[in-house]
Image (cartoon, rainbow, N blue to C red; front, side):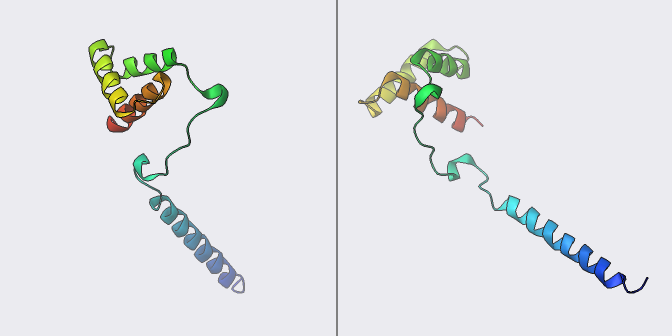
Amino acid sequence: MESWMPFILLGIGLLAIWLYMLSGSRSSRPARPEQRPPTPARSGPARLKAGQWEGRVLNQMRGDRARFERTLAAKRVKHPRASREELLEIIYDEYVRDNR
């Protein structure tokens, strides 16, 4: 029985080291999404239309149409060549990021 004791202790030690390394890998992940690299632009069938983006943005702004129009106008000045869908996506992403 005593000949198995070193193997049991070795197994417990390896398990403890593995668990320690596993818990350390979680803390090395970025805490906030801003630290992650930017995601590529959405394209293809997953891309939302202006009406869908508008609904999402208005939902985030709790239906405040005046605020929506002011924000859209400000983003249009900052990004004059962007389409309406792109502007609404920018507004939505910034709003979600800033209100976490």
